[in-house]
Image 1 (cartoon, rainbow, N blue to C red):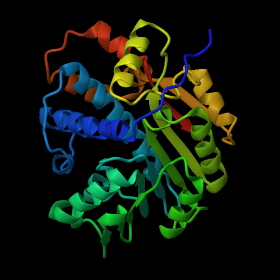
Image 2 (cartoon, rainbow, N blue to C red; image 1 turned 45 degrees about the vertical axis):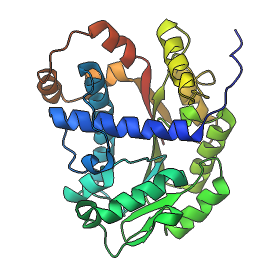
Image 3 (spheres, rainbow, N blue to C red; image 1 turned 120 degrees about the vertical axis):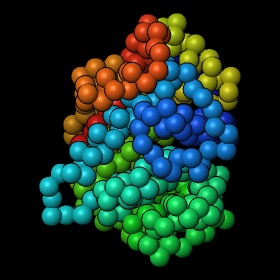
Length: 306
């Protein structure tokens, strides 16, 4: 069956998902699911999420956290870099810095509308600014430049601009680099997301790409998810191009990556998250949405490409 015609995304609507993610993370933090001492500074209107949403966001956070720590803890005489594409108001750098686990360079990229707000918040908040060495703030450009943390504005469909950003950040393209894209590729036109993946594969000689996004948009739950997002002006432009784990892996292999692994969140939660930690968070709230939980978890996936 042919995929339905592609809708167009509203930049403002897609960027609004950034605010939703930050609010969800703060909800988790306040309930004790995880520790993040900085997300509070990026949320204007705190909300209390349902136990289902809290547990789902925790699983996403725990999976990313595990992959980041695995990358950062690898023995190596070389320095390490993290590049976060479509980073939004993510606070990972500041938490890693507090824990003394930050990489040599942590670069974030997003639309100007997002990075300009983030630059202003980071500059105005002493708790975030104290983690930056000799920072130069340019909120009007959506930029922060410091020794270890870099923030730049860039449309991810513009790979020439990405080249310029990497040069401006003084990235060493030969160093071990983890590239992170959380719910980013799925909002891009398939041709644009493949161009981005080809760019990353050719740009960095020693990299791993970690992606998180939705899969299986063909059933009733998936169709409802798609309709909900379309009604908000942020359709999942890539959902029909790569709707299965196999197609997600093939997309990377076809764009220059040598190896690809993809698993859904149901498997990650039950097999890869520390069982002690899993039991701890399962006692935080009354939870009876088990059917919805399973359906939601198999609709999302993580992939690692090398």
